[in-house]
Amino acid sequence: MDLSAKITGIKYKPFLCADLKEFAFRELGKVLSKHASFVLNVSRRCKN
Image (tube, rainbow, N blue to C red):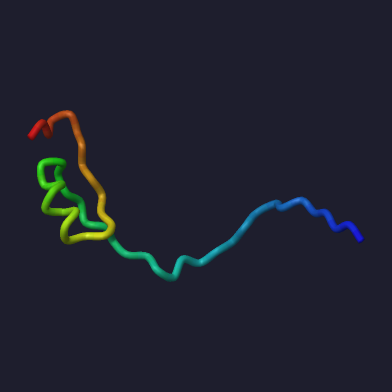
């Protein structure tokens, strides 16, 4: 028996959402030793 369908959309509710902390690129070494997930800010103004 063959079964085929067209998916028209997926609805979901995220359960494990956490606000991610934002760190500057210059803090990367410290951040990697303490945090598993984060946002890395690498703007052009941040050169250190």
